[in-house]
Amino acid sequence: MQGETAPFACLIRWNVLSLDQWTERFAQARRASLLQSYDYARAACPVLGLKARWGVIEIDGAVAGLVQILETAFPGHILHGVHLDRGPVWLPGFGAPDHVAAVFHCLNRVMPRRLGRRRRFIPDVVDTPDMRDALAHAGLRARGSSYQTIWLDLDPDDDTRRAALRKSWRSELTKAQHNNALHVDWTTNTQTIDDVIIGYHADRTLRGYPGPSVKMVRALARQFFATNNLLVGSVRLQNETIAMVLVLIHGSSATYQIGWTTEAGRDYHAHHLLLWDSSVILKQRGVRDFDLGGISDDKDGLAVFKTGLGGTIVRTPGFYD
Figure (spheres, rainbow, N blue to C red):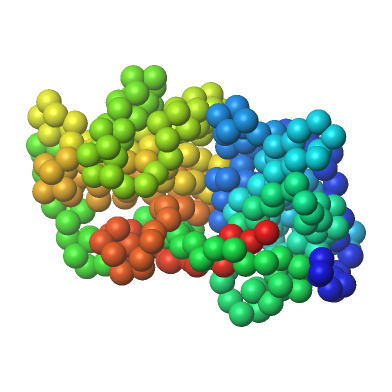
């Protein structure tokens, strides 16, 4: 079964917008995922051996959102892979369960499930019974567990956001800010990009946590640096760098991509400095939503740390085909 009849008429028009038009519309969306951004496609496709397509979603004749898919195909499309990761991107006023059902019903019609086609849909919708019903009615099958990330709303002013920090988080940030031995720097250039990636690779190798490959991070950093959408921050203690982060900006949203810290960095709360400063810088640049990154457990240390900054855990339904 490819799904029931959609409650709205939905049309996806592919590759009809200029880059400027796509960028303008993308910036209108709240909580737009990194994986749906044009810069991400430009960076990831050569690394993954994929090609991108960009769709404008129209529901009952109105422009409702954007969708970016990455594809792999062999001659004649006998074998075809379709990746829709953390999308679509909904424009204001859209994204209700009926809209979600309509767009995935449309995708089912355009790219039906068949022998030789591998589909990976990771809908970027809040995991609720209504949303799961909408995906099922569109003919999608659940194939994986839910995904959780933490979003920080940057609309409130800095004083309001600081007052909303968890008390212990705010106390540790204040200690770090008043420590004259620490120096925070937000210089983004080829040297600092190399430094944060080298440190990330060493830290990930030592501690064994999951994360993007060094090749992918380098490709992302190169692309986002070229479009002035990259931030690299570091904290030094005397002559030693004790923590670094790399943040990607996409539309009116941004994503904490990688970071690392030393034991001294943890002792001196260096990441409190970097995350707080990055939120201030992003707000100054017009960013409204900051994706602090995925978590595996909403009660683990990483989740507790990120929610201390004021972030909200958002759970999506996971992987479908």
